[in-house]
Image 1: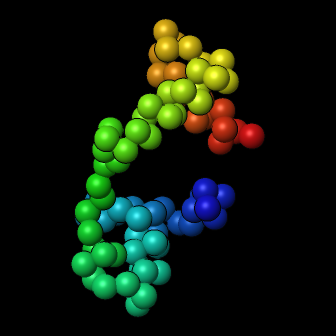
Image 2: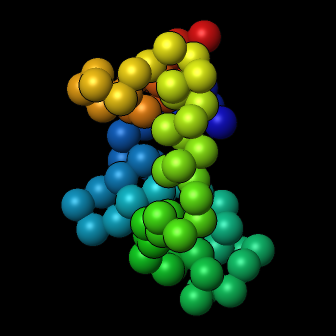
Length: 80
């Protein structure tokens, strides 16, 4: 998904008024407007995603004392 998105022209990624332009256009004829026009929602801490990412980062050698250890862990995964 990331590789495909990186090949898109900038105007299909985001505009000053809209994000995920290509994704929203692709979804427009398949989903109700209330879904594809919806604002982005942040993942809530209550989902335990942040805790799991922290655990995985630490298991892979990214210590909490490092600056943004979870971000560094995710970047390392993307680089693979």
